[in-house]
Amino acid sequence: MKEMHTKTGMTNLREIGGMIKDARLRLGISASALATASQVHRNTLSALEHGTGNVELNTLLALCEQLGLEIILAPKQLTQFVAREETAAAPTLLQKRIAARLQRT
Image (tube, rainbow, N blue to C red; front, side):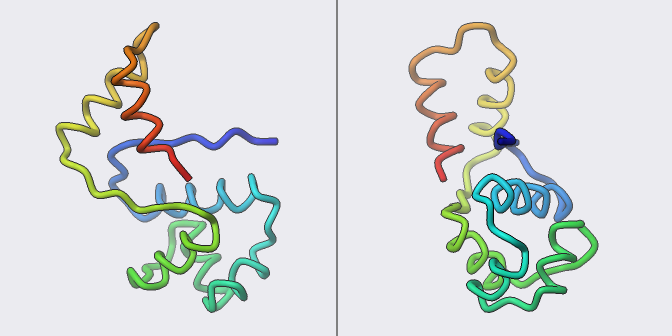
């Protein structure tokens, strides 16, 4: 099973779509099943996962709800701190807690 990769500081729809697709595959859900459960057109989901379409926030929230994902808005300083610390050999307890909160699904 593919391990979900969490990236802090997402900057474009392609990265967000990739995370949606990774979560869907990790859970073993077909694109059609996710689209139906989220009440999203299959073509909209496909475009999002491939980074070629633009979606409304309500659509993204519906998909995240079905995948058990949460959108977290955090100050850039926090996400930059976590991103730097992901490369460190031995993260502190605080760093682990912050990373876990950002990765929580």
